[in-house]
Length: 119
Image 1 (tube, one colour):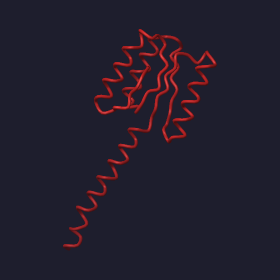
Image 2: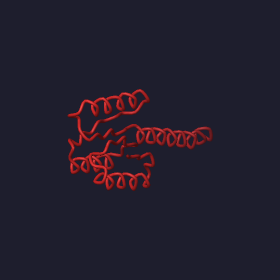
Image 3: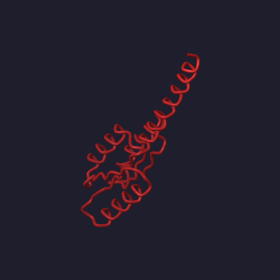
Image 4: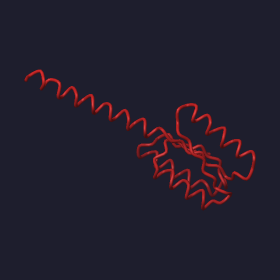
């Protein structure tokens, strides 16, 4: 009986550690690639290359096309932040208008996701 009680805390700790590892990995699994437009072959190349490299490194990457629209870009950032993406690779639609999106992402990074970057 005493041996069975010994294994209970060991199994509980092991289960806790395994759950934490899976949760931590799941939090780092997604990378967002936000581009100003996919109507330009250069930005298509940029987005596809970044996505391929992210996938080669073991991340799940998703491309977001802002269609040269700052409102669409803002919507993408809202969705990315809420969805818990670990990082953002970002080509801005408008240098001045995109600053607010980067600041939102950085603020969200301060709440547990510190890998946000923009530029």
